[in-house]
Image (cartoon, one colour):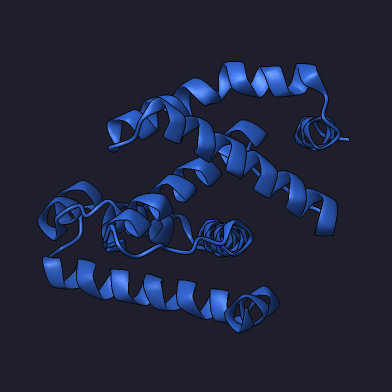
Length: 187
């Protein structure tokens, strides 16, 4: 059993030492991320707990394979949950006379689905050529085309645009051809 599998199994079974390790190692990073992104202490605690519950539920229901470190996986799940929460807050209109309904189970299901989509995207991104991975990472970081031209020594912005388009097309095709995509799309 790998370290990831062992830690995941320990956490899923409520091992206090494993949980304490996560609180010591990962929670400070989550706390810092949430505070830097319009959150409070309570928000960080909520996100951390929700992500742990989500991961444990997925592990117990259908198994879970983690390619990166468990700590990195947990941080990514927390980050995605917090971003989702921020987006949800933008859309909420508060009216004192209206009682808003909130369905925790529905929210957790949506967050889990979002995490599975992110994992599929990450997996397929890693299957691309090194050149495509580098180009798309720069593109996703919103690096200007002129900087990409200089950094990767392409001839022009047009060459970079064309190459990014081709890499995105490859990535999209790889994702849509995966059987998990069809399942995630139907949910």
